[in-house]
Image (cartoon, rainbow over all chains, first blue to last red):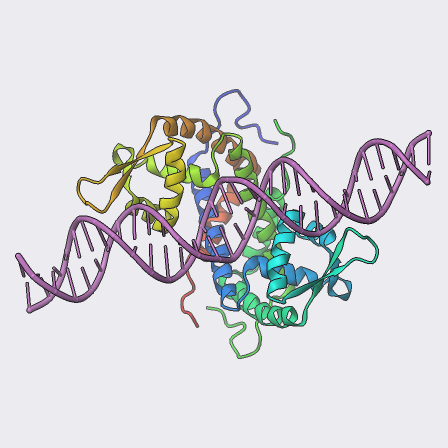
Length: 158
Length: 158
DNA sequence: CTATGCTCGTTTACATGTCAATAAAATCTC
DNA sequence: GAGATTTTATTGACATGTAAACGAGCATAG
């Protein structure tokens, strides 16, 4: 694929690549920070929102901690901790898992559903204002194309 | 600019926007996590690397904590804490500021310069492998164009 | 059955970030 | 110059993330 930079010499970026890299970083930071900022106004952090919006899609709005962590790409440790904090706020509940004596079920609590409804509107508005409304059809296609090139792990450790 | 979504109705994303938003998220997470992962092998965290690479560009490799924080977009509190940790590892030094009795100067220490040299090679290689090498000239231009649309704050709070 | 190993969720210890309050020095106002 | 205000860096209290060790329950081989 890339015939550039094959030798043993140190790697480098040409000017266009450098410019694009800086632009990439600036863009990702701006959008990410912006959405997190907007979301905070609804009383949920971004991790909170992730947990709730993933959980609401599970059957019965219920999921094993293990399965939920898997689905979110989190460690069980992280989710366990965060679940503890969210349980204290009554956004979710922890029930024993009838199918596995070790496990527990995370259940979306009424308060969590309310919070999610509010936050979803805020989140959508934020994504529109900071992302979708600024882009035209061509931009969207370009993003999908480029994401396809950047989103997978490197072919080899090299 | 955008004549879509002007009314009082709830905001929404059409399918293309939704797909692009997911692609955008996937891409940013993959690249960011990948670079951080590679950098860790050199013994520096990403914040460490930011501090050192910003500091090395300052005159005399020295900068007020205030100025440094400004340049990095960090709070002084954050930089003060991180500087403390880096000072303990002898990557940087804190000297009193002769021009301002309150201030302090962050100075790049020899160990920090060494660490930065190693990390820079690793970082560059990582950016090549995970970013530049995967993209062609058109991709790079598209990124710069799209970044221009996404990187600034919203026109109004609305 | 039972012994061995694996998986589950939690916990401990620590690294890191935020925000508000602080102390000290500079700056401004009169 | 004296006094009020601002600025600077640090700190305390806390929220959040990671990694490794843990105890308890499950599962499989024999």
